[in-house]
Length: 473
Picture 1 (tube, rainbow, N blue to C red):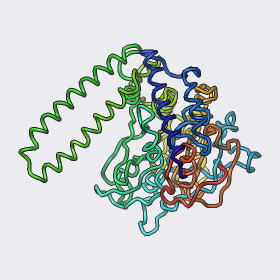
Picture 2 (cartoon, helix red, strand yellow):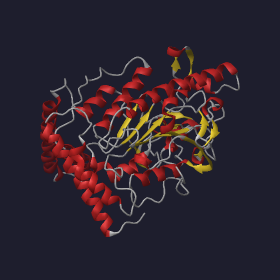
Picture 3 (cartoon, rainbow, N blue to C red):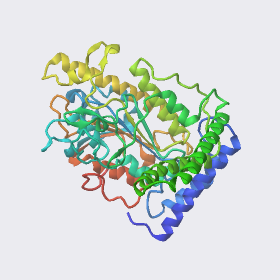
């Protein structure tokens, strides 16, 4: 999509409106509660968004009414039990299968999307390692380099391509969450690095965005530490401490530079790049004024119950969207290949073990039960978004695009075609929910291109193995 100079100027004005109006709103409240923001406070944004959308269809990072447009990707592991997953019928005349029954009340707000593939997750010449490839390919669309050493290589993920252009509109350019362990190195799947299997988001081909599994740390990162009403003061103290430490580090390194060899200076420059990035994050956070302070207690940490852990991470994601702390997020429920047992629903065997059911009816039933357990948590999250009003009077779900899926299709056979995918939300009115859409073997990356178009992302012609936009989504 090519913009004219006048369109670029309109978009720039819109971005300034978004930033300044939010900042003034937050400063006026001091320590504020979570959104909703009052509609009157964003009237200039609504007008600017309508003007900016003229001729392009998609202002940058907002809906046509000026509300924030949000995008999230939720990953569940080990494929889906096919017979229980897929609906019957087609288009708007579809009936949900057993796995999706928890979404029945939200049927008009979801699309079940069939016929999307990740061919780069297939073995090819790389042999075994389907679980690692499924994770690494899911949001990048590229074939991960088979290595368990430091020379990992995947691709920039769809969320980070969006964050590069709209991340500056919020306090956090993106949010990466997990309900699993964090592993950055080592061998995990048939010669593939653990980095592939435990990360969804990739800032560059060699740099995954490490997700946070601890709800307490996520909450404190978003809203500060301490009890409600104390967080702004604690945040300001932490910012001052960080800046003092950075000043000390920079002063110390300036003196040190004169004593270093050229090779050591190169290493120091690389280190200072990270220090400057921290500085920029502090400055950016300060530019948005006071922190939103939802009247909620800080989570105590990672719960022992996995269902509760998922619910907490979903709740934090909802709060991050509600407070416009970020508009881009990923949530890895468990790494592909996870062998977690689900004793809470009467399944003592591991998930991965059950997924290789070899058509054993008992094991197939257990896989379907696990899929249903995951879906119930996702449905609860969507219901929360649907019940929360946004700035334009619509729901958060209406103004969101949320992909729920897996890079494996049939866990028994390790297939990567016709992936199990649900697209929830209306994208601010730009999507067509309430249907079962069947496509004829298209790269899943085509869906990602279409989603980023709706965010107003410019100059993006390809993601991974995409072959074009996904028509009619």
